Amino acid sequence: MENKRVLLISYDFPPIGGGGVQRNVKYMKYLSRLGWDTNVLTIKERDFYVYDYSLLDEIKQTTIHKADSLDPISIVYKIKKIFKKEKPDDGKEAPGVDESAWYVSVYRFIRDWFMFPDGFGGWIPLAYKKGLEVISNNKPDILLATFPHPTNAILTYFLHKKSKIPYVIDFRDAWLDDPYVSFPSFVHRKIHGFWERKIILGAGRVIVYGTPLKDILEKKYPKLKGNIDVITNGFDPEDFDKVIPVHKNNKIRIVYSGAVYVDRRETYVNFIEAFSQLPQEIINQFEIVFVGDKLKWATKLIQEKNLTEHISFTGYLQHSEALNYLASADIALMFLKAGDKVALTGKIFEYLGLGVPVFACVEEDGACADMLKSINHDQYVVSPTNIYKMKEIFLNLIHREFKKVDYESVKIYSRKYHAACLNDVLESVVLKK
Image: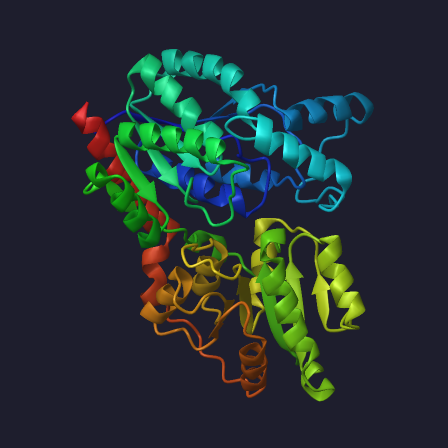
């Protein structure tokens, strides 16, 4: 096929940073190399805790179209600009938000009960108008909707109905079946269920992050069988070309990359509790570095446990800088909340791509554990609630017999390979038109 054109629809996209934008950035990067004319429809202006303009350097061949929005986050951003007009610092984090603050609780209550389909729905009318303009001028062959944010999926559906251009929906996270999402009432869940069904069954193909979600959707929607493709999260091998490991001392360095989300708080607390219960001479042999947001509740716990000499937070770093820390690790660390057996977070694939062993606080019969077992690398898997076994793992680590990950066993998680898979999916849908 020649002159293939794809329009990705995503509220979240660089220059905002964070791990949530990586999948789409890599899609656009490698699809461009595969002959696609890549376009993105995204938000014009929004407030976010971190920006990373370096990500735009990877997608210079991609045209980014921006639509204004009437959602609360965009409105707050516009108001703040009136009083403060500095450009956000590249790779720097904004002051952290106290998630226990009253105004955060009020916002979430209003969002969950009265905003549809989520807190970003105010983008839909203006993005719909801009999207039709982009479609008229660029004539894409296919639309690519990205999830999370139901707003992205519903907007894509509306553009599809008006333009008759087929769409593919990519579930980086689930919709109704996301273990981290709850609906305030049966009515809310019913409405979201209506839209999930309509959008999924209307798609040319459906992409999911892992087999667990594929199984769930095929059971809910039998018509989907044969129309779902699995493309996991992954790592970009080109990101590792310029990695320079951060200098370390003789201590065993454990590195966690990314945010410690509040919904994984219990797992984090259990991990810190396990570490604090070790004999002091064992504690002294470790250095634990969290490369990501400095959340007040997380750092406060470290202070309360008198572990500030052994556990540190870097604050948000650009992706390349975060990889430098990760490359210096003896062990990489990841958390999921207790009971989550379906998630496959993006960070674990970068850990594996760099060959770093993984201390995985996840359900032992869940998707992450199964994936680690499949590459014979589950020796450091522990339930999020099993403090005793966490301590055992620490005691095993002091022997410094770190088993590196074999690249051959994980190369199927390369973003380049994934883009080739996405290319095949998109082409199959376009050819059906």
